[in-house]
Image 1 (cartoon, rainbow, N blue to C red):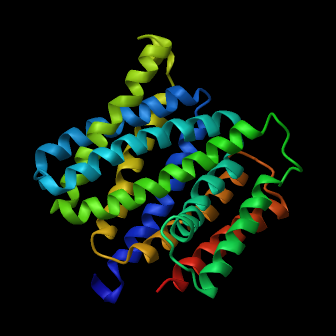
Image 2 (tube, rainbow, N blue to C red; image 1 turned 45 degrees about the horizontal axis):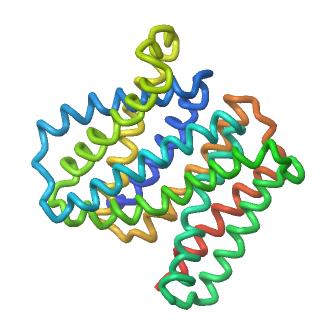
Length: 285
């Protein structure tokens, strides 16, 4: 890149901003089911164009791609539920902050990988931040548990599809083709689920939500395309750490746009999660 600016970090940081913004747009639409459906249909249409313009991914990439489609669909459903039940400023950091923690714990427990002192510190810092977010309004009651569960479930799915796509795009031979097929196959699934649940008239009264959904869909596709492009060229751990700067951006959106009470505790907790992610990723060999 001109001027010696590293292309991969710039791409990931741009993706982080776009990711926080499109999630904010999705949360802004009152009927979250309508909002997510519009977003999915928009990036499906964009992906259809990209499929024509890009080569087909290599055969070795398709198992990763198809598995990622299933996992990302589950992630979308869980995130939709989290936004229906909880505040944007609380749900987004939990959903985005928990994947690095989960990956570290899975590596230690299931794969027998012994973490170093820096990684243990990172896990502890992230854990403290997530606990702070969960308890920002006091001890969660039974009514809050479904929202928190959906946010954590989203984080689990993000951790899984991040690994799948990091491997799949390297096998594909084409970043554009991989992203295009990923969104083309994933996009219509939610619309089909919604049609079964609500019937064909769901979008008839979408009205003012349509522009937000269209912009959100374009931003979603662009953000993930930048991340996958970066994963094909850079270190996955460093990319994961940079990507989570979206947590701070989302906290600002929650306070400024949604007038959610950010509060010192919630802001400190979000920054703690971000700091823990940085420590965890930078400590890995």
